[in-house]
Image (cartoon, rainbow, N blue to C red):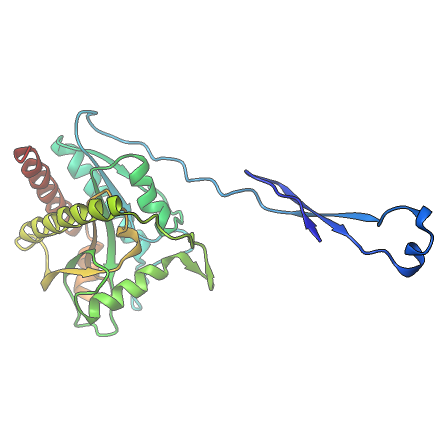
Length: 289
């Protein structure tokens, strides 16, 4: 069996079958060579990267990309009593954060999604990298079987989870690419090199620094967990060259947290928390130059 080698996006692939001659074919040499057959198989075209979102704000300012978690066929966590869906809450929060940051005038802002669409995890941070973002914030709501669990937390990347709850959350969030049992994410491994490892180390330090600032600004404004900053191996945070955090804004499974997250005053307080932390982060970075 011979395979025709192809490269680039293809709409179909051809397999050339060279079948051995039968006894009757081989007896008279004058009957010619073996017969060739072609079988055409349709192959779907290569997947295209999602279009880049619009960027708003002064071109001279650093860029913050805000990622509203889940969306489309993936509702995220759902409040069993009210039916409140994480994907709807995170989109409203992302828009509130964008508006508050733009009102401050110190950064540019883009959203990975501004409607109810599904993006795989690599597409989310991929959008931010293609835009050359200076900071990536992925917005989520946590959930737990116990209604008593409440309060916001922030996660930064680590290959080893800081505790069992962080490991549980990473396992849940990393499954966001799986819809109806099908993994829609890219299974290809990240490029690994010494340079990327060094860049990632610096990026992780910057991410942790921003997480601490977020904790400082959050405590006076919103309910937070005592161990606010946690670490886990979260796929959406694995860009090697861009400070990234995952902000769990509260527990959608908790009645009080859910009401806060779904209220305008709650959204405004969360957005103000992010604005203060973002502006402090870039002011500190500018001062260190």
